[in-house]
Length: 378
Image (cartoon, rainbow, N blue to C red):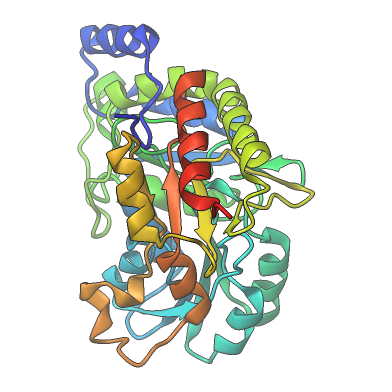
């Protein structure tokens, strides 16, 4: 069975984790700080804070952005449900916007129509690694005095107008889940250019503790901590950070290899008239965290039938990105909401295998089976 994805991990990461365990620092410690510093160097961000995962990073993003009860935050419905959940965590309301069908990113024209006196922030999602139009959203948010938050869960290593994602705005949240381009098992990162934000993020991720464990451990004086505000246990461990450091060193190479596969898919499948392939505009650079194919209405097979045929042929797939407003946790509250572009994209797209190392034989099989099932024989 050809999997939909798998992490690229080698003995380098295993050795680094092993060496870290032997130091005795197995929770948040010096390796976390090293990972943060190297992530800043890679992305061009001023500050970074390693977090337990991207969902907790988004939760902290809501808090430091000042989002609270009865506020409204505009975000795409077509995104993993954590994007909407983080808004709910602070008592605010997700206001779901449409997406652009060319890249599955949030549609700024629709966002403009949704802004009200209650709107406090906009979350843009760099969907499956393809950057959203950050500059246009920064301009819009500045005009309306709104916070801009980037959900970059899938976008480590992607670039927008020549700069890595993570360096453009004040709150950017990353994921290192195994489905992402690099992984720490679970884990996340927040980057920011705001010194007040980074100070509070690092406070909140460790129970609001005034003195963290490492500072207390390394001090030659007796120190007692105070808990300055309601905080959380959202820490990354040094073991995870050690793995992340090795992964980060390979990130550009990993992306280059992933793009070779993605561009081969595009070249080989571009003549199949009943599908739509990813579009990478000038100035946008995707890490191809996933490769999505949209099935037009004239396809000889529907989405579910195609997925089953591919599964029967030994090829794993996943349905397209889901719409949060139609998930059970949300659909009663949003029962009257209809987002035709998002719903159509979610219902008629699939993700096909993309990972490294992926053999030429497996790539050829995916391509040949898609052609077999999608090209109508006349």
